[in-house]
Image 1: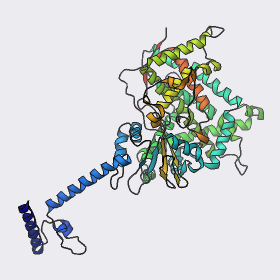
Image 2: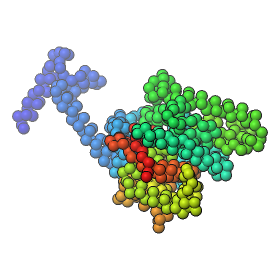
Image 3: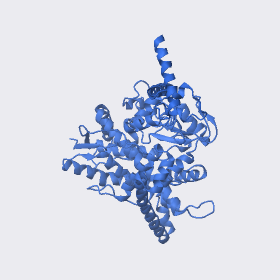
Length: 551
């Protein structure tokens, strides 16, 4: 050891002599850039020793960042923050990745993005925090400027992105309409017509042709037609034999996909891409043009129809577009075409995806849990056997009161939504400094992401069997029992609780019962099933199934 030290110092002296003789020495560049001309040994080390120091520094930073990962949830690297972990998560299953981190961190962690970006946020799945931001301190946690600016191109000032008075007025009007008898009759009648005149014939065709069918695509078409009738009062005709391509529907889906990518991209980057017309921003621009053209045409046509119709005929129409056309803003003026477009697009986003995506995951879960399907069928048959006409009706159409009696079916659907919520994550922003019930400090302007997907996988909420599909957890003495909106947040909670929750359940139960009573639904063997990263949690590769009639 002693001889090593002597050799080391001799090397240093030789390096110093070499520097004095020539500036072309192979010593470290630090010797030339020392601002004070200091000739300390640190700046005069040979290249190989500088490399050793550099490697040691890299190892130190790596160990330090990885150790921080145990405390903070993810490794926090200099300059890039936790971005490398996020990129790895995006390449796999984003929602499982978030769930893994949150479960390790007891339900809350702070994500730190690269320096000089706005990707920093608090992520939580703690029911106490969820109730606090959705209900207790609702006014301190609006959607916020960041969320609105990110989704504005698609959603504008519609009910999903709006805050304060704009949101309150739209919600109040929609709430009144949703609870009106005319509206309820229109929604149930249109659903019945779509299921029996379009859905079932399309499914029959797949059986006759002996070919698999993408059930998710079919269900999306069904709910898209249904919600367009409710929102716009028009029938786009997506669900017809042959499953025609509908430009508006395709453009709408492309726009939602491009919009969600903005949330994992630094704002400066996607705004630059938008200005230059590059990548996903170019796709979004073209998709929005088609969405706007469809909406503008419908609004223009409706205005013309209403101007020619009598007041009595106008009152008979119950679609949301007609209702909002009859309203006035604070200045007493009719809503502009832009506001009407935003309102309808927002309701289409909600009505199209929530039910269809939930039903897709539901049928996939049934395929993995045949005992649940058997119990659902037993319940349906029991209800039908109580009919006075004893199932003589042809074709068999379920009555509203029968749908209401299907308690186990509702439990099975709720369990599917618990594990695979249609909206897996949502976003808020802090108005004033605050503190979550779990002690997390929130500074003004902090973005808060609450992970609804993760909540269904937390043992602290649902027990050790939280990852199992067990509809029985929703039943008490055979009756369906709802859960707190802050443990089961598939339909949001507090003042923003989903207005269409009751209809969504009716729609899902009616469609599920109509299919299950008639057909065996089997997922094609080997079909890959994984979530797609979008505003709503589609199955990335659809749901290819084979149908066969029940004997």
